[in-house]
Length: 136
Picture 1: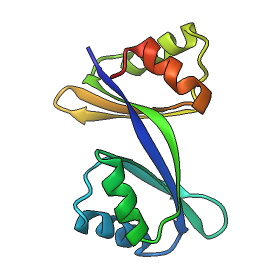
Picture 2 (picture 1 turned 90 degrees about the vertical axis):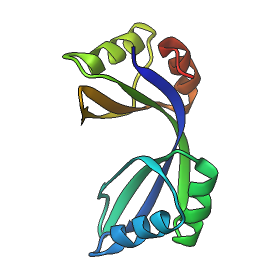
Picture 3 (picture 1 turned 30 degrees about the horizontal axis):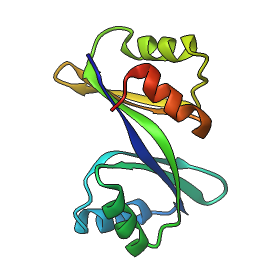
Picture 4 (picture 1 turned 135 degrees about the vertical axis):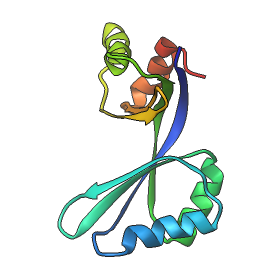
């Protein structure tokens, strides 16, 4: 059985230049911020978008302020479970069965027979999705 919990998801836009991601992540590291997930990608001309899920939202927000990040906050579901063929398909099928449209999903094999995933939902669907999946 997968562990599923509702989490705070933060997004920030930064300059897409050498060393900017290292600067931001270094500031978070130095503040002791523990991240569950982070990823980044080019977004528009000369910009990159960073996505964060932190174990402690308040500590993350304080450190992000030090890093001069402007944050947008939303809700997502963090899922961690035993890896098997169709693990994510099963979760998406449950959401589809409840007529919940997913905005995006990121999933990765975490090694040792486990996987981790983040499911992004429209704000109006987050509470219903959490209930359907039995999130804590």
